[in-house]
Amino acid sequence: DEVAKHNQPGDAWLIIDGSVYDVSTFARAHPGGEKTIMNLAGKDASKEFNALHDAQRVLANVAAEFKIGLVKATSE
Image 1 (cartoon, rainbow, N blue to C red):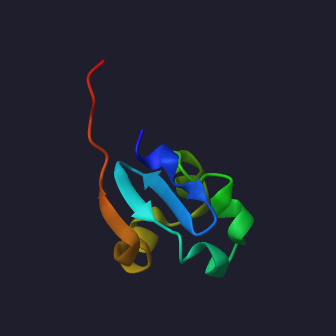
Image 2: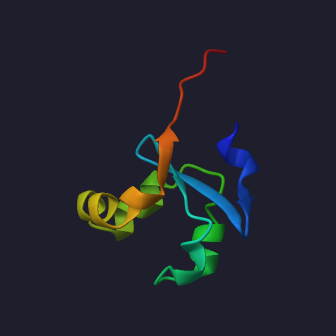
């Protein structure tokens, strides 16, 4: 629920493989364009991210500085 609140330019978070990334400052510099990130902001972007990237390399070398936490499981 917290990640979903961060879905605007300048305040954009993504979930990728169970980790949360604050991509607010990176969105404008994203090689695929800011719109690509903003379409997924506040959501789990794992499927889309993994389909387009060498996930292990990108997460370790590029995205690591943007990682802010892990998704906490909730019970219903």
